[in-house]
Length: 216
Length: 216
Image (tube, rainbow over all chains, first blue to last red; front, side):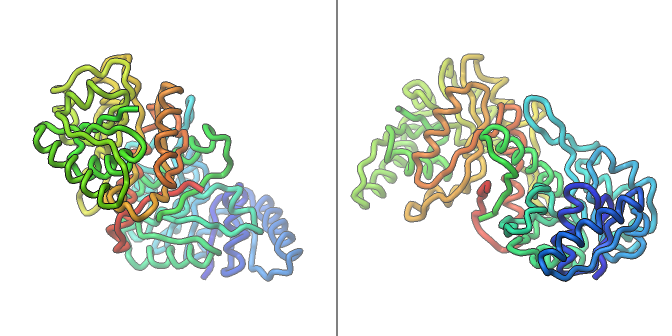
């Protein structure tokens, strides 16, 4: 399938592009097409150097949506509303949200919008026919990029469309060692988003880096 | 140290008593002293049969508080306020909350009180000098009781008193294979409580049992 990554030039987006382009055609999207192009060239360079074949292309965010069956919203929460307002064409697409609304005081905390979660805010903003799944919320950007290391994590996937959720879980299990779990309807995504600040706090208060989770 | 378990005859309380009495003197508390006595006799029976020495005693909840340096509130969220209103003497004690405010619709979800978490509600109800830590929130009752299996989990510990938090973390690391992590101040406990409904959802939607977590 074709996977479009809106915000694909950010840390998480680029890391996901590197991993996913080994299995699928990935369109790295950006507000500025030249940035997307530069980013895709860099990714292709990294992967070619390893002798790996990949299918990657830099496009603007709108084309990343238009040309793909699966769209990943790899954007920081603070840019979520503005980015979605600037885009259209999400009808019938599978839309993956790894977005976490997080703020920071002396610790990290979950600061969801009135809808209850970034996932439900996206649900409200996109057309009914878009199949929204929350997934990959709890994986640090650096881990995506560390291609020599397996992503030895569990992935909680929430969504209301069973077939779309299955597709996203299959996508996750393709990525080396990621173990997907159905974590319920989209309404349950709030608590999955809330795991990320716990991981950030565990990292901060125990002098660790890029902490992830496994369900066991 | 002496550890009092308020609600020690419940599933989680009894399981914790079994594990902790191998290392410490444990007072199993209950509203009815006879129930606590019966429960402690059962625990002593289980442990003696294994040839393990243990220090266990059944008392009423108030004595479990009065006679202990560390008090574990092993009570269901719905009984939390009533139980705390019926007890006193928490001054200067370390108080551990494994309590999770959870409700259920077609999925499990975090339903915290206006204070933000069970931990912060306890903070409000108990005297200033009580040192409250959230811990053991994400471990299923059945796992505590399965004495043949190591508790191969991570434990997020939140609290505002550094020394008390250290004591609770040491208590956790004594219990075979539990790995404690400082997860920040008590204000961060909300998100740790919120992990439990994710684990319940993962169990429910993937036909699993007693799911726990590891931070890796």
